[in-house]
Length: 366
Image (tube, rainbow, N blue to C red; front, side, top):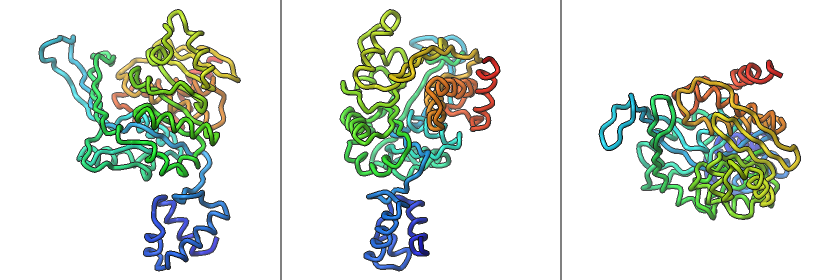
């Protein structure tokens, strides 16, 4: 790599969507000269295809929601049809964004592709997010409101009611995802939640299947779970809770768990994790078998974000080539940390602390 190539490479690393004209202006070169240098970098394997995305081993790209989370904790017993005293909190949220922040805190090279609103909350959310992840490929939508999620919690930390304003994601069609595909395709794992429109989700799954890109899908909620297509080939790992699995299979998991799992595996899912709250998780794999892991005993402060933390721990481990059972244990350890925090993403979380909790919860008992 010569000096000009190095300068161009560093500018592209800083902004993968920089144009050739912008590069030419910054380096006082002609645009054709920049094009020649870029062509040389591509031939040498330093960058990958259109959008000049640098290929990076271990990178995870998260696609989906980024919201402002507002939590209201009831002080005392909930009473309907009257005013209840609460303590309120405001945090950065959204499933894909939360997963990305957790991974960032764990030291993973992670990027977020989402839609921010063109408002004060969107600016705040963007600034909060970019501390932990690359938000370069995300989109600030003109004249749009940032996604909002409001949760009412009991004083024991259990959710009573949740309200979501997510209209902004209706604007994320597949052309937006496709325009960032070289960025997505250069990753080692893709995480997708179901906040985007049904067609966008379906085409993203299809494209990952065609290009053998490892894809983890999180269903977010029972209503949004129904955005999944019938054809699920391309989903390397599906993460869902009991209600979400029942919504997409029609089976009652209390008595028809095996039938539900069999259906999803036949539809194309390679691996699956089903969460059962205090009962722990069950995992299933086309190649690694199945099993159950009980949830560790924990003093719960707030359940919000625990599922996102579990997904992050699982991806963290899979990205290190761990098997599915071990990955589930990392997920439970990560969730254990978050459940003891008032934050949607625990500030205490980091790679060393997760390894410590994992050892305490699992390895000392083996």
